[in-house]
Amino acid sequence: MQKLALVLAALLCFSSYSNAQQSSNILIIGNGWTGNFSSCTHNVDCWAGSTDTGDIHNAPAGTTGNGSTFYWSGTQETLTNTIAINSALAAAGIQVDGFDYEWVYKNGNANHFSGQPGGGGIDPFEIVVNVYDANGNLFKTYRYDYGTNFANWTYDTGTEIFGTNFLDPSFFGNVEVLVTGQDIAAQAGYWGPEFRADESGLYVNYSANLCYNNPLHDPGCPGYANALFQQQCTANPLFDSSCPGYAAAYLIQQCTANPLHDPSCTGYQQAYYNQQCSLNPLYDSGCTGYQQAYLNQQCKIDPLYDKSCTGHLNAQCNINPLYDPSCTGYAAAYLADRCYYDPLYDVQCTGYQQAYFDQQCELDSQYDQLCPAYLDPDLVDLGDVDPVEEVLSEPDIPVVAELDFTSTVDDFDGEVVIEDQQIVETVEVEDGDGFQQVDDSIEGEQLKMEDDIEKEIAALENEAVEDDTAPDFVKGNANQEDDIEKELAELKNSENSDNKKDAPKPKTKNEKIKLLLAMKAIELTKKLEKEVSLEQNMIMQRQLLALISYVPGFDYNEKKLPQTNFYPPKPTVDHAYARWFLNDPNFGLMEDSQYNFK
Image (cartoon, rainbow, N blue to C red; front, top):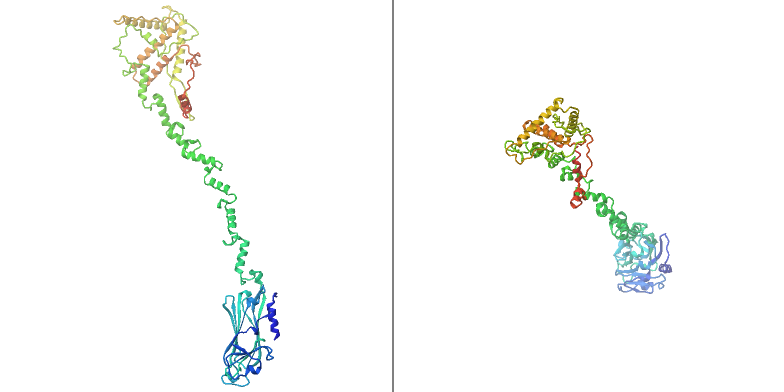
């Protein structure tokens, strides 16, 4: 009996454990029983009794020599003993695996009475063990029925395994032992089942709980899920949004992937700048591609911004088709431009016919009756005006210069006759590379005319002057001069010649040349009036121009005149309009178009 007390003491003092299962701690002991019982002091007193008071007799240990024993009467009663496992097993780091039990009982009478099973003197007797968790819920129930077999004092032992691993003592609440018996024959006294409580016991089986120090030891460990969660959070705070440090780790992660995630990210400013530049290079002048983007922007607004702009040429051509020969409509615009300044530039020019007519009238007022200065020969009274003098005094005829002949004629009263000159037209021949100037008609005519005049004068100097020895050429000229003088004399004697003065007779060589030119011009003008062919008319006009523009003393081979001040000595014009004109982008093009006809 003393063994059980020692085991209880060991339970209360337990502070260590081993990995092997143990059964060294008792939970239920006789002194902890509760129920409807009373004490007896002797075996005879405990069994016998003339009456049944309905309780259980209990003989305390030492009174009968057999320890604490309970005796049941004819009334069914239950003994109860309860202990809290979590209080009894205060040691840390253990797990409860189950329990061992040992029951010492007796269920057998010397006599057989009615009501007993099989008539063998056996009364109802049962022991129940209920195990509760910490919340008071029934965890396990174990029943031991000893009311079926006759038994003298019997020691029944065994082991119960809970079948659940890693049960910490804190999981459990109370363990309850219920012992129920009855004298089914209801004999006077306490002749029912007997139970030796101080020799019976319930022992906890426990072992080292590997989950205690490592909840991750097994998925079945209490706290495994939480421990696993903490482990994952420790390894990676981004494991779950509820992990400690998740917000900071998430910010670092996002900033590493994209510095633009948050303004607090390292490198955010540079990344933002780069982003804006990639979206629009015009964001800042420091952006890569800013210059090109700015050029493109300006060109889009105005293709005239820069020559490199796409559409610049088209825009310039739209403003002025003369901007470039490749412009659409350049040829028509060029023709219109030339015609604007000179309607005689091309027969296609608007106003060409009128300009040509005006030109002819300016050259010769007698060109056509429609000329503004046309004089009807039948209505004009020449009076005493010498036609030769009038021709010589015409301001449009440049005859003021002197011819420079190598030989001179001291006195010449005859007439120098210049045969009709063959005018060479200006011809442009296309050779594939452009146009080439072949000849200049007026200059050619002038050169030929000068040669003829010099030849005739030289011939006159070598011939005799007397009428008998003079050649027919001179005689003919003299006769012609006499006819002209007679005609002038007749004009002087006309009715309206009172106020007219006689035309002076040419004396010097230059005067004679001028007279010769004037006579030739008059003769050619008369022919021109009678000519109806347009082609011959143009040829004769050119001959007439050659006569009028002939300047004595000018070297047509060298094409040089004596150097003189052509313009008066005045300061160069410099004002706002002149500067604007020179700075106009089309000024150079206009200037080139006057000289470069290719």
